[in-house]
Every structure is written in structure tokens, then in C-alpha cells.
Amino acid sequence: MTKVKICGITNHEDAMTAVEAGADALGFIFVEKTPRFVTPDYATSIIRGLPPFVTPVGVFWDHPPGHVKAVAEACGLRALQFHGDEAPEELTQYALPVIKTIKVSGPQDLARMQPYQVSAFLLDSADRWSEGEARQPIEWRLARMVSVRIILSAGLTPDNVARAISIARPYAVDVNSGVELRPGKKDPDKVWRFVQEAKRA
Image (tube, rainbow, N blue to C red; front, side, top):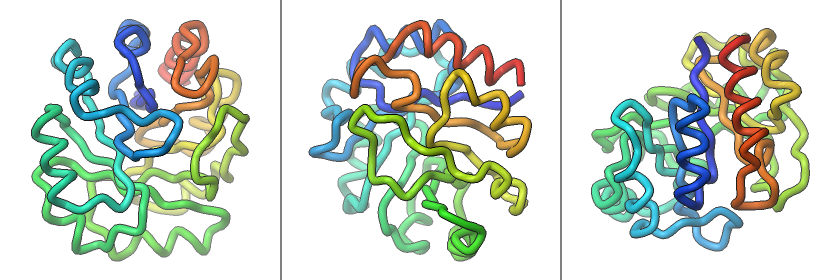
């Protein structure tokens, strides 16, 4: 069954909605000056209330390794997701599972996975982040061109996630703006529908 990560969690209510809907992981964005940034202290207060089999994932973007490790330890993170230009050797020093984001516009971009030794790759669009507008999905068939563990992201919604999974066959799907009322605030109905559609696919 495809795993589901609800990313961009900024408050307790949204975290509990995602948990109750059946999400396998929650994403906490520690990238300053982005619409869904949370401080480590506030993220910690949410993470402490999570049940034992829901994975809190920290999202980082070209942060120094010392900062990443400090945040991970303080918050109790159980996986790390990197969206910047982190070098392959930089991502081998973490004790936690590492997810590396690869921004793809075509098959040629998949070659950038090769130097990395990570637990999974997240395939994302070239957009920096969403300010609330709908994002364009990537070409889902690209995920079938590699034999590594893939997390599919970008432009996923409750209406298209089942089809995306049927085409891409990913290990997991990751959604943020596709289940929001506005940047940083989830729509409970969309969260529930997204998880149900993903799990049924």
C-alpha cells in the first residue's frame, strides 16, 4: 500500500486531522521565510502528541549540517528531507533516514539521483514553493524509469492522486498545497479524501 505524507503542518489541529485520516508521515518545514515555516519549539510541541507509528519528517533547504542535527534531536524527528543543493557526501552523515528532493522537468533530470546514497528520492516540480496557487504535476511516468524508492509530489490533489499512483507506482505520495484551505492551513475534507484515495489506489 502506498504511504502518505501530509507536508506543511503548522498547527496541532491539522496534525491530528492528518493522523486520524490515516497519514503515515507528517512534514514540518524548517525553511525560514516560506509560507509554512514552523519553529523547532512549536514543531516539538506538535510532534510530542503524535502516535508512535506516525513519522515526523523535517524539511530543510541548504541548512548547515550542525543546524539540521540540532533541530532533529530537539524535535524528535525520525526522517530528514532535503530540498536544496546539498552535496551527496553531505547527506551521508545523518543517522536518520534521508530523503533527497530531485526537481524534474524531464527524464534528463533523473540522472542527478545517481551520486546520492539516500533512503528515498522525492520527485518535485521546479517551482520553489506554493503560495496557495495550484501546482502543475510532474510527468508521473518518470517515476517508473528508475528502480529506487520514489516519493511522488507536486500538484497532487484528492482528485488526481489515485491516477498518479496507478501510473507512477511510487513508494509514497507527498501533498502540501493540494489539501489546503490557504497556505499553512489544511482543509480537513481534502486531507481525508486524499488519504482515502491514495490508500485505495
